[in-house]
Image (cartoon, rainbow, N blue to C red; front, side):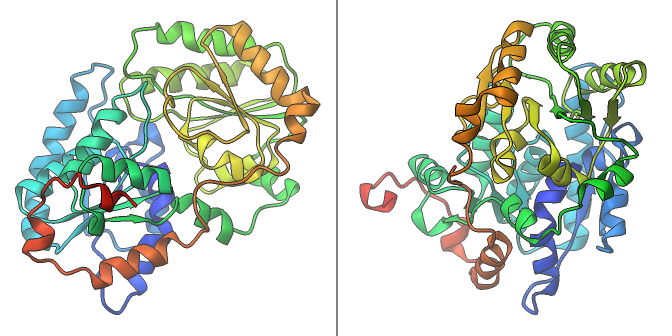
Length: 382
């Protein structure tokens, strides 16, 4: 199942490897913001890649009310139950910590369908993703973590050792296999002239705080206004507050020189990372993707609190002074920038899809897999 463009990008090579396997049959369900014109109708990217979509399930309600999300989850689960009855999957593969993913897992576990989950054991303490991710871990039967530490975290939750595999982060494979665009090619694809320095800004709602979202965005604009360059804004996700952020960013880009807003950059996101001078915002891409490009990241607030950090991260608060100070350090602090050249990477070797497919091809769906039990024995954490 895929519910967002960002998630689909991470799943792409694994979907491709499943499709190519002689021992597996791919079934694909697209839902969430993929089917929303407001979020770029990114199901078109799946169609462009020529993957057959078995089910498209529309569940987004075009509303800024918090109640829209649980209502959408309910719609999704009703339609998923019918999809599972028809498709009869042996096992489902899901990624991450989105509310769409939670609905998918809840439907599967109540229909006694085993779940394989990617990116468990991580932390994002400023968002409801934190609770969702760990809830999915306890429902899942197989776990593909992105680092050894996150594997240990899943094991510490009582998951049995035979269920847990450190397969690395799938984005590492994306970066390894993608031929990057040259500067001129990227400018043509974006329809923008990239005057230095290039800013990549990705900002999402912080769903576990009451700090005024309007103030957060105004502080961000105030900080960015102190610098010259090119500002590439990407669309927020479909969490509560995401519509407001996107409308505000788009309006700002229309009225500000050298500012561009994209609902979804798709695969171009990696190319922008490769040519940017700084990333600003609160996206997990700053934690995982950006280090691969030695890209400095000004990480705002608590949304990514608890995640493993590389040396490229500059953590700042929500006020404009802190954000501007972080940007200044990211662009001009020679000692900080020099420290990024030999920065080690935490998230694997770029072979995630082949590792996952090997496990799926060989897993036995039997009572031992389906009947979960807590295991806190010391030996299993080695």
